Length: 378
Image 1: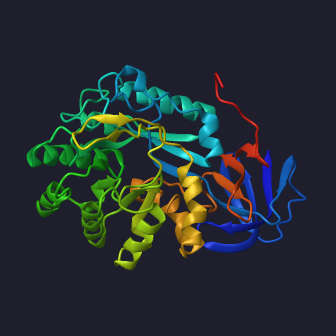
Image 2 (image 1 turned 180 degrees about the vertical axis):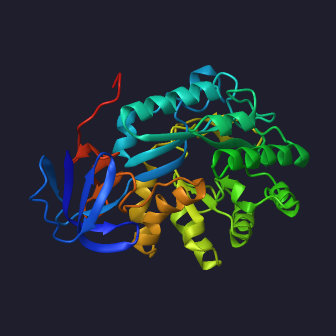
Image 3 (image 1 turned 45 degrees about the vertical axis):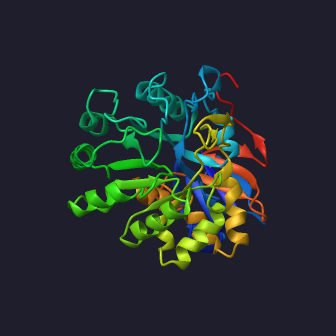
């Protein structure tokens, strides 16, 4: 079975222009203008005239099993569904835990990621939660990353009133475990860091870098939360690190403006990624630290940020890369590009960047706005 996308305006994310794309067996086979496929049998054609084709979106910070719980058990957000991810254009998801590493666990998160893979998209995860020492599946950070293909790294929190306030020595041991496991398993190995709003948030990260730990193991997210945090994140990115901006918004500045500010401050566009924090809780605290409100984050904010980035003056190929290729490169996975040999994960957009169709692993999941697949229990 072959699928041919005709007359696509392709951003790979590079601006390729008008072309045809042939996919089969879950892979991109060929990209060429006016492709002739008469000799092939069983070809399904999707006419992309007037449409924009990009890689499927990669969301590296999703609460797949739900988040929350910070206002009691009734405030736990539900698990994410396949349909919501597809309708968000997300073909690759990375699951994380948050504050609640007690009633939720890495094992439960692994099961949810595995379920999403069975349902047709790519899904990874980080072991652990805000908590240090890190709770794992196997009992060991090294074993989790080395022996479980879906696990890319470890999640922790720093500079947040909900973190465990780990010592720099504890963090160094965690990064050492990540580094060794990554070397043994052929993975990049990541410390995915929820960055909070407390004072001098990058202090411990900078101490670890000064010890000689490579910068590519550090993955700070929510970096536009406060002005101080964002300015320190910019310095981190100037050293060669990737910084992750939350598309659902921040207290400091709108995410599209944060991207512009970072680029104007000398951060290479390739070192900026965007994630949704989707399905996580959005607690509101008063000046005493008491919770006064709670909501759940949408999983589609990466999709919604694309036209905002472009309207803010960021070139389409740079904006698209921030939710596709840049993310894949920061994670160390072969994803995020429409090139021969890559997974056939594609989004088809209307000319206003509203989502039209989604293909994951070569299977058409949504066509002309209509869902063609449904997850279990949906």
